[in-house]
Structures are given as C-alpha cells and as structure tokens.
Amino acid sequence: MNRRNVASKLLGLMSFCIYFFLWAPALVIIVFSFSSNKYGVKWEDFTTRWYVFLFHNMDVRDALFRSLVVASVTVIVSTVIGTITAYGLYKFRFRGKQLLRTSILIPIVLPSVVTGASLLVFFTRLIHIPLGYPSIILAHITFSTPLAVFVILGRMQRIDWAWEEAALDLGANRVRTFLRVTGPLLLPAIIASAVLIFPWSFDDFVITYFVAGIGTTTLPIYVFSQIRFGATPVINTIGTLFVAVTIGALIVFRLVEKKGESI
Image (cartoon, rainbow, N blue to C red; front, side):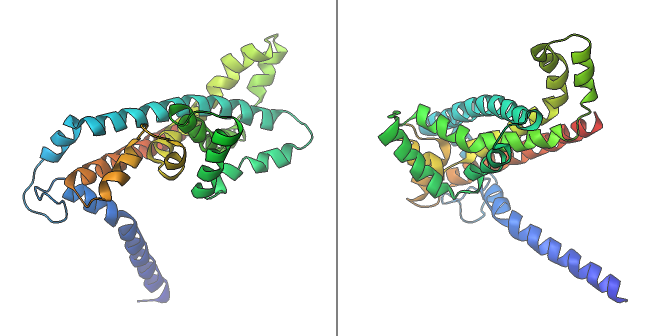
C-alpha cells in the first residue's frame, strides 16, 4: 500500500469520526424519543406515546405556536429588508459603502450574550418597547437580516445584469424592472435566505431569553425550563422536531440553491 492510499484511508477515517461526533448527540435524542423508558435515558421498548403526549400538552403547543409566529414574521421582514439592502449595496455607489457592507456582519459575529444584553438595554432603557412579541421579533430581525443580505449579495454576483439594462432601455421604470426582471432573478436567493432564517430564528435561545419578558415562552425557552428538572422523553421528542426542522430547511436550501445555479 503506497503513501497516497494510506493518506486517503486516514482522511476517510478522520472524516467519519468527525461526522460521527457531530451527529451522535442528534442520533441519541432521536433514538431515545421512541423509547418507552419514562426518563428517556435508556432504551426499553419502541413507542410513539411521547409524541402523542407532546402534541396534547397545552404548554408545548403554546410555546410551539409562539416560536412559529416569531420565526414566520422574522422570515418575511428580514428577507424584505435584506433584499432591499443587498440591492442598494450592490447597485449604488455612495460614501461609506464598504464600511456599511462590513459592519452588517456585526450582529452575526457578536457573541449572542452580548447581543441579547445590549438589545435588552436598548429596548427597556432607550426606546421603551414592551418585552414580549415586539422585542423578540425585533431582536430576531436584527440578527437574521445580515444573513439574507449576504445570501442575496452572493446571488447578485452571478446574475447577468444585461437583462435589467435591456428592460430599462426598452422604457420600463426601475420599479417595474425590479418586479418583472430583477425580482424573479433574485427569487432563488430570497427563498434560500428565508429557508435559512426560519430555523435560525426558530431555534434561538440565548437572545430570546434576554428579551422575552414574562409570559412569552418560546419553544427553546420551554425546553430549557423543563430540562432543569431532569431529563424526560418529551425533551427528546422536542429535540427530534428541532433536528427535523433544521435538516428539512437545509435540504430545501440546497435544492433552491441548485435550481438558482441552473438559471
């Protein structure tokens, strides 16, 4: 066996170990979510009763509803603002453009604890927004919009802008050109950013914990409050749902991205 084959096998083994390390926690909660053990920490018999119990639990249903509302509103607002911002950054020249483009990264790279604490001070001390749905949605839009900006900017760099110039030359105004030509060209990136933002907002715990206030418990906060009293099978079922939502979003993102590359 030559050195190239040995290196290839070692690289494959390392890749397997890394993927196993990344996926093992998710696989464990998925497997134990179907275990009849009442503590959810060891395998006994196969059962789906924890899923039935989960969807009949009013606290879980309320928390799930709040998370879906917050994530849905965040997706709509963030993709609209992100599309407008990305278009402006790409198409127009103005002083400080590069600084603005770089500074958009700040909500992404800042530690979540810092972002959450600063937003809490901002909402309660400066603009006096009541803690609850308004503060949670504004906080999620703050850290989700940069993601939409960079996904859409990446798409803009691959567009043939001759289509837009042709529409303008033929007499269409900018609004009509954007709605009939530029918008459809950007649509795969807009959908892809929405698909990425939804699980990002749905799963967020740290920032939401700071700005949620009392009585607006989202699903991640509910899980945290329950797990402090010990492991239960319901936590495993909720974790499985989170994994399913995230994987589903990634699959849709990849399909949309692949379709966008073919246009």
